[in-house]
Length: 76
Image 1: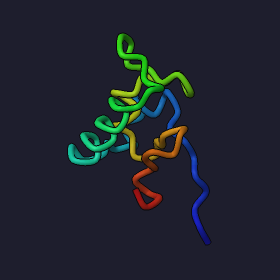
Image 2 (image 1 turned 30 degrees about the vertical axis):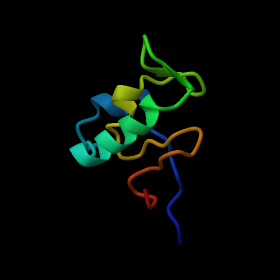
Image 3 (image 1 turned 60 degrees about the horizontal axis):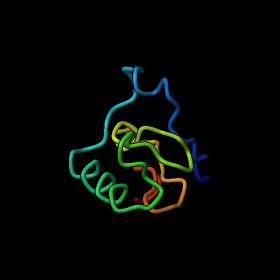
Image 4 (image 1 turned 90 degrees about the horizontal axis):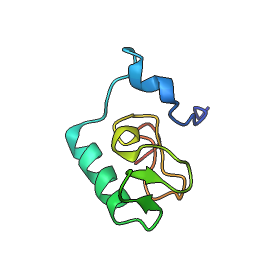
C-alpha cells in the first residue's frame, strides 16, 4: 500500500525527529526554485504556496506545488 503524501508543515522545521535532505537534493530543489517564475526573488517565497523556499527545500516530506520536484519519499 502506498504511503499517503503529506506536505511539509511549518513546525517540521523545528521538529528534531524530521531529518533534512542531503546537500545534493537541497541543491537540486533550490536550483529548480530559483529558475521558477513563481519564486519571489526578494523574499525567496513561492507565489503559489507562500513558503520560504530556502527552508522548505531542506525538508524530506516537502514538494513543489507546481510538481517540479517531489518529496524525497516519493521518487524524486
